[in-house]
Image (tube, rainbow over all chains, first blue to last red; front, side, top):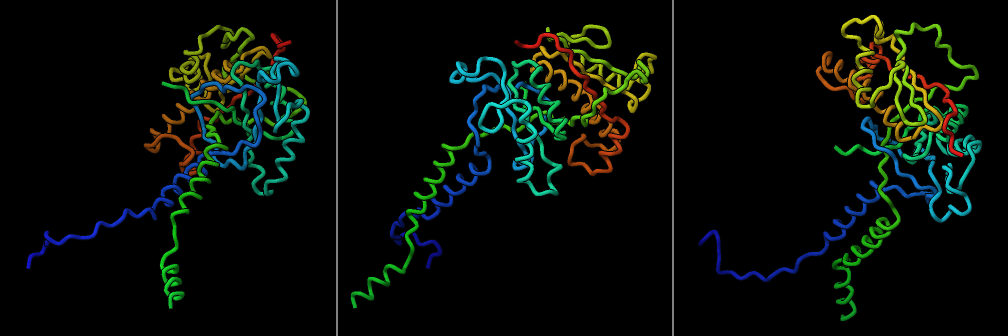
Length: 155
Length: 185
């Protein structure tokens, strides 16, 4: 009586595909977590500048985005090439910022409203004029936590 | 009899083969509709809005580190032009004043950095200048934290540690209203 019987032929089992859904679900969850549904189409071209002292925005539900840049090709005829501000999905004026912020603010529970961060996604090549106007407007609206969106500088 | 047999066979096992298809469908949906955005940046706390300008004439000039970026993207630091690569070291030297020079800040707690730009300044330049100033403070905090607690400064440290460091080297960066040179027409 040998412990390791060699002669015995076992029937070849079929490869179970039952774990395939698990693998796919794992991938699915990964993508669901790392990605963010973009709620608005970008109408301005934004290439954020490089920087080194970056902080990561933690809670994405507490972040609202302002885009500043030159209109993309499609809108150049209508809106010109001057840097413009985009709030949500449309071109806006600086004086529409308070109402935009307020609309975002009411959706957040009151206890967390002080943690709202405004992410300024500004194209590197625009001039400070419009950025300054936006900053002034943010200060007037008492939205003081802001984040200049930037990319990590390659070594 | 035959009927019973077939039911037995069915209830043996739920066919999970199509589960993968459903999951793939969802996966492809998310792959297509989403974009990975890098949500990183320089976090800044703006000062509250007030109608009158802050009065900095009361400050001793040795405690003020005035940085000016003009519409040509040139840097003027305390009245002298400077290359941006020098800014970080100079700022650190100004804040700590290791050699107790007469023209640098008395104490890190008294040091004030003022940043002023033109409306025509390039945003990229502005961010890189701001980045350097912040980097100076970050490096000082790192150094002090290493000396005191043996670890680098980070937001995960206990609040008391962070506070003790920020009490000794507070980051005071005031931004003046920009001058309207070089405004884009």
